[in-house]
Length: 137
Image: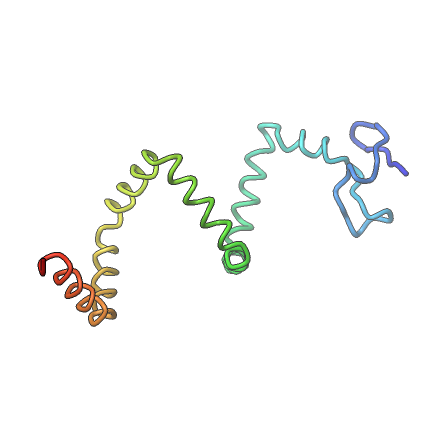
């Protein structure tokens, strides 16, 4: 069963249309290809960017929640992929890390101080162990 696109006037399978529950047949009246072509026009790109930016600002919590769920669901895969990227792009990773540390040095100092305060005993044990292992010989 097919449907005629109202933009390009070509009959296409229903799979070539986006789903749209408000229509009788459950799909939009313009095919995916025509929508994509329309979105790529320079005059429409800015409108789309503004709409997307506004949506992200309004749904910030929803996005955070989704990303957190997705991360927890695919944690191992994400960790492996990021390790692989760091190995393949070591120079770029070093540039990004250095840039981040430079821009956020005050924040990093505060976090470091908080960590040391919370983990004082653990750090003392590790320091003692390191001294024994390296200077006891």
